[in-house]
Image 1 (cartoon, helix red, strand yellow):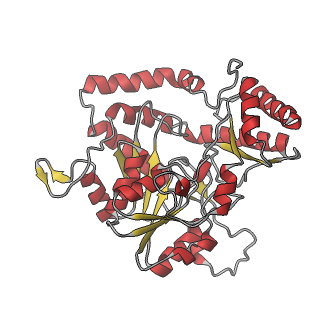
Image 2 (image 1 turned 60 degrees about the vertical axis):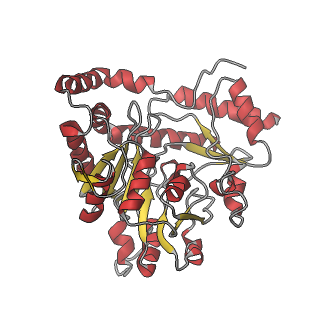
Length: 388
């Protein structure tokens, strides 16, 4: 196997660019002696709430904890059902199961990789209490349609934003005239993901667009009661120390990680814009390549991953060929959640998710990826695909 010349992700250039700011921020925390929650975390929470335009931002230990605590803070209980997508990392469904509820999987749109809103209503039962869309790969889900359904059936909505910090939902009013009466769609236009539903859940895992140097997560909400509940749940179910009123979690954001994230938050728009430029370049180079379907490059997408579809049965062989040529490529995700061993046999077929699980291939993506590297990746992909 050849040495990897272009990995799927390289975090070193970003760190080198902001190294002095990061070191200063870390040293300030070390000097303070306050390492768990405290003023540094509060300052980051205030900054990120202001950035997103949301009332409450609550730092927690991971994106998975953000989902679990978010669900519980909304009152999701054992026996409830939560509608979600099968095409996501296991943490999505796992969080639902871990609060005792049942994930109900609704298939996805092949163009967006996100839950198909046209299929959601048919999955609603008397036990359905919430919808959990995932903004996969940084592409906002169809929130206007999903919020319409949630309002109609009195359901909660928790947005899984693990891969989508800074993504903006642009709505779907393109072409509407000035007399359009669809106020929901217009009100939701140009909103950051994580601020549209009842709760947003973010991950700061190091590989994310806004990544810490360890684990970290965030819950967002405009609901005061949900926010109060989430803050209690993250510290063992207590508002006042040693007065625990419910079973909670030890899920507190470290101050050092908050300090790092506070520095990186200043650059997130610049980094996301660079990701979009790289994605557009990829799409231009691959637009007319037989056997390759490029992803949607809709406005508001922040391209945590640049994921193509490789038609036929060539995906796995192509990935190996790229690796042999020194190019890192990953499969997110080869097995839809409903087909994982823990859930196998419990759910009806989701044919689009199954198909895409056999086709998707994510190419190298990070903000500092050079144009000549993109050129090498695309030319190598085309060359090797022709030989398969």
